[in-house]
Length: 285
Picture 1 (cartoon, rainbow, N blue to C red):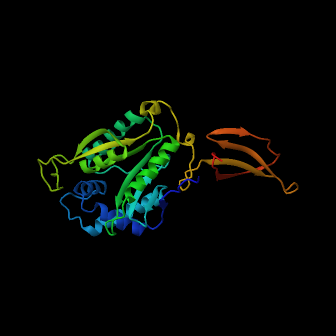
Picture 2: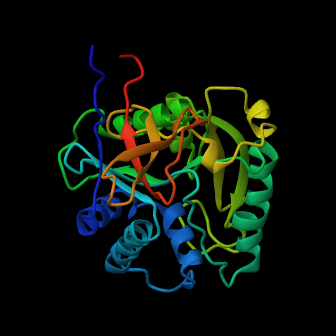
Picture 3: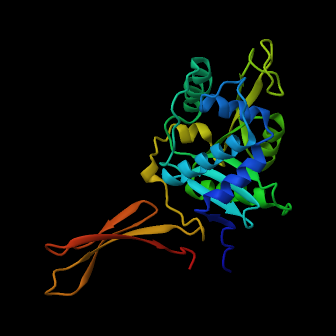
């Protein structure tokens, strides 16, 4: 019986992605605070809806340009920005050293304490498009897609919840809260308003992994050792190296095949020129 194809699509329609992300996050006080810090905008400075949308456009463009996954589901009813293992996108430090310590230095140290330097998926942003009528399960489909990809590749997914409501939703999907931390204390209140005695916000470092996380941390696995999976069919991708011989023979010779990271050598023609290609194979057939 054929498997269901992925409901998630990669897209280059940055404008529609940005509009959807803006609709999902423009009323979030905690996310607006985060954006102001990352883009060095003063907390007392006017932060219009237009500038918020422009930043969403920048975010989506950056992920598209730098190898991230810009995806949509159900005709952009839900959208996401995701980094796959080996394609993580780093942000520059801000002018606020306290913010840098919380979100960069302490965060990285905490994450490493749980997974070491092993590969992982990172979900930066995922949200429903409030410019459209809600289609049931569109956000869930994105989570289920990446959870399936992570299960097949045997690696975790990392994300942060920036509210208690979102934390509960992610826990419902199967994510576990491994660490919580405060930010914005003595700067803003829970509504994002300036307050020198404000409690700020709480964020949660969350991970989804179907195996033993400590065992994974100690495995020492690297990005190139993860099995490759076709994100549309969920089938393993078999990397095949072939060579085209010199014109006098007009033949092809298989150099090696790799299935599940096991390479089997084959005879190589003299003066052969290697060509690499990826092939999706259903191993159940």
